[in-house]
Image (cartoon, rainbow, N blue to C red; front, side, top):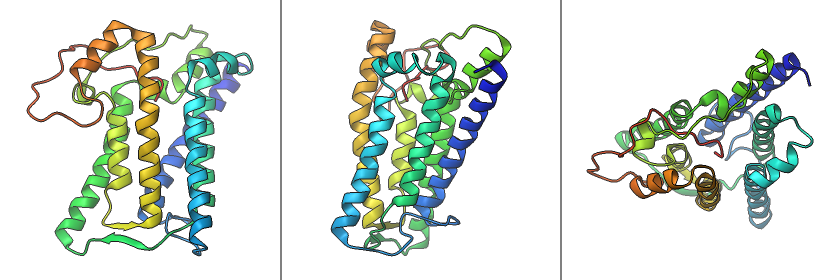
Amino acid sequence: MGGLMGMIYGGVCYVAFHAAFLYLVGFLTNFYVPKSIDGGAAGGTAVAVAVDLALIALFGLQHSVMARPAFKTWWTRIVPDTLERSTYVLATSLVLGVIYGLWQPLPHVVWHVDHAAARGMLWTLFALGNLVVVAATFMIDHFDLLGLRQVYLRWRGQRYSAPPFRVAWLYRVVRHPLYLGFFLVFWATPDMSVGHLLFAAGMSAYILVAVRYEERDLVTAFGDTYERYREAVPMVVPRIARKGCPFHAASKSARSH
């Protein structure tokens, strides 16, 4: 695929990911989307649970397998190196679309918060989670993470090099602010249904498992530098009264997210 066509393909993948992420907001809040997490006719509980767990497993399989170095080595024999990240982003967006479309509602109420101030606080945490997710991508390299930098450099005829390991902003507080943001997105709601709880618990469990493999890849890539960073900075939950991370560079590469 030529440089211009690769740039167009990367742009389509980039837009598809943002559409999938924006739909997630409506999906979890049951606002302004044709199919939400509690929308649609409720069927049998056992079938709904089985389908929903299979959808979460599908996401975990795609997201983890395609991020592993061994798969990338094989995959780039078929897909050009410069399109590998964009294709990963597109595959993630498509799988999310499958989840949105096939999710089986389990609308029974787990908790419902009536108090106006408490509802406002939970919605604020939800909004904060989305902000943290977006901000975290820019604290590393947003366009590299989503594949645009690779296709742009190919279009310009320039050689691609992966971003170096650097630490900045939220990455001085936790090693994975992206995941911290998603935890807030999944769990901060004043109206928790059984289906929402299943989604939040399943996705959270996947993150906690996948991050172990991700960190192993980061240690392989960055060696003692990442080992020292891991010793100094907590994974997802910030430490209280911590004066800061001893790293002084500007931002942190995290390509395997």
